[in-house]
Length: 57
Image (cartoon, rainbow, N blue to C red; front, side):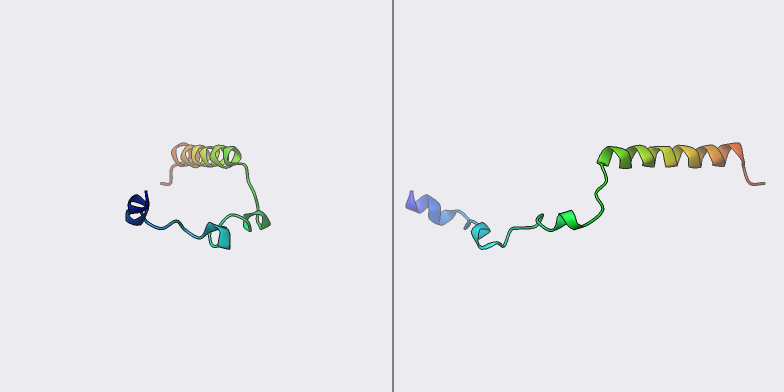
């Protein structure tokens, strides 16, 4: 087992606090992804409707 362990890459130092990427992510605006996708689809639909209903001469 020791020979196998030597060939593998070393494990990252997660206990030293080096892999804490998502702890500070609570300090911003949080939007539900469903609302973001729906609002984007509505925005695209309105933009296309304006473009085709009121063409520029």
